[in-house]
Image 1 (cartoon, rainbow, N blue to C red):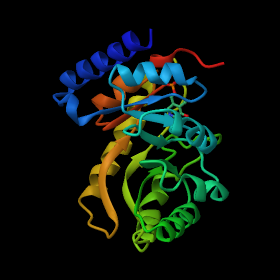
Image 2 (cartoon, rainbow, N blue to C red):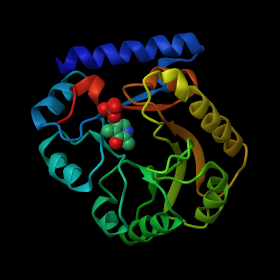
Image 3 (cartoon, rainbow, N blue to C red):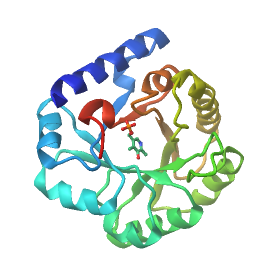
Image 4 (cartoon, helix red, strand yellow):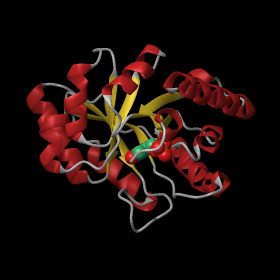
Length: 227
Ligand SMILES: *Cc1c(COP(=O)(O)O)cnc(C)c1O
C-alpha cells in the first residue's frame, strides 16, 4: 500500500514539474510519518524514501534508533525552546523556526555540540490566526537578526498553507512566498544560503511544485489518514 502510494506521489510530482518546466530532481519529497508505526516507515524506506518528516521531538527520538541510519529526519512541527537541546544534532533540517529567540536557542545548543544546524523560517503567508510563523513583512528583519548567529545556517523558508477544498486557492500564497524567496536569494547575508522552499502537503503539493517548491511534505497521501 505505502509503496504504491509513494510511487504515485512521486509520479504526480514529476508531472507537476513537467508542467512547470522543472526537473523532478529539484524537488525533495518528505514522507511525513507522524503517528505512523515503524513497519509503515520501513516499507517507505524499502521503496526508496530517505527523507522523513515528524512534528514531535519525542517521536523522532523514538523512531530514529529503530530505522536505518541513512534516513534524514526533518523536524516540521512547532518547536518549543525547552526541546531544542534534544533535537539539535538529530534532525537534518528544522523547518519550523518561528521566532528569533528559537533560532538563538538552536544556535547556542549547536555551538555547544560544535555543529552548524540548518534551519528554515516558517512564514505564515496567509496570516492565519491559528498558525505559527513569521508574517511575511517581518521575515527579512528576522533573517537579518539571525545572520549574526554562526552556528545556524538559514537554508530557506517553509509555509503551511490554509486547509482548502480547492488547492488553486493556495497558489497565491505559494507564489508570494516564492517571490520573496527569490528576493532573499539575491541578498547576500552571513549564515544565509537560500536554497530550500518547503511548501505543499497532500492537498496542494502539485500547485506548490508548479510555484517553485523544492521540498514537499506529504503524509496522508503516502501513509493514509491519521487517527
Ligand atoms: C502533518 C503535516 C504535513 C503533512 O500533511 P498531510 O496533509 O497529511 O500531507 C505537512 N507539514 C506539516 C508541518 C505537518 O504537520
